[in-house]
Amino acid sequence: PDLSIAILEHGVNVLRAAELRPQSLNVDASNELYHAQRIKKKLGALVPVRLLKGGEKVQRAGEEQDLKTFAGNQLVAYMESARVPIANHPYLEGDFGRVVKANGRFDCAVGPNGEHGDTFDGTKLALYGQITAGPSNAKAVKVGSGQNEPRKGLLHPLAKLAARLRRRA
Image (spheres, one colour):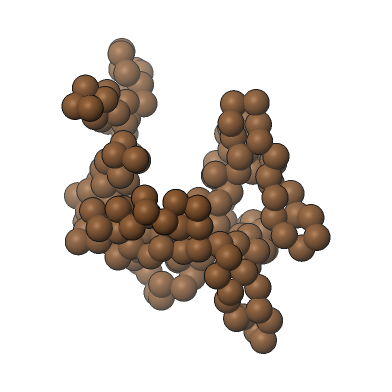
């Protein structure tokens, strides 16, 4: 739990350093409400944190659905109209591909390494938050160190942070 909070905090701070202010951080509070509340307490001063529960009912166009289904339908519609670009990466393709719609609801088979549609869920919460949080502004931000050669050692940008947090524990 501490590592996930540290990763989120780092991401928010990177955006703020680039003079971008996130509209909201949307946290799935369906199964781990205590952890979601910890995230809100820790990061609430940096970014508005919204705790979203998949089972909550939402009313749209006179129809009531649970948030999980509504946000999933919303993401699928945006993807079909090419309004949500998804990076062309085998992991994302595989994880998104695990999600299926059955009987009007979204479900996901667990992959051999524990994958279970988290990238789909994260994207749908981000899109839902973007649409429901109001107008937004976007600008280009430099990503990476600008080096042409891959750096030696830890390659994942958050690996050093993860290693530091493990040493503290």
